[in-house]
Image (cartoon, rainbow, N blue to C red; front, side):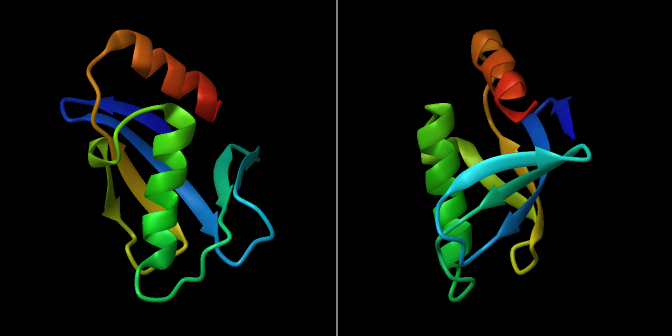
Length: 94
């Protein structure tokens, strides 16, 4: 689920740590991101932000985890107000 707010885009995702490779998948309307990082000492959260930053071509400082720091289900905020970037992000996650 992607929602536009005054702070940027809010995206609900589910992560799978300890995967063989970093990749994005979607099924049944759920955005899933597989990460090679382990869920220890915030490594998976850091890897998630780095992965999204690289894939979406936005700075890491524009991505934050709003909810779910210690959960596989997370709510992230992508702080961007560029309409082209918003469309790109929406297409990427759809």
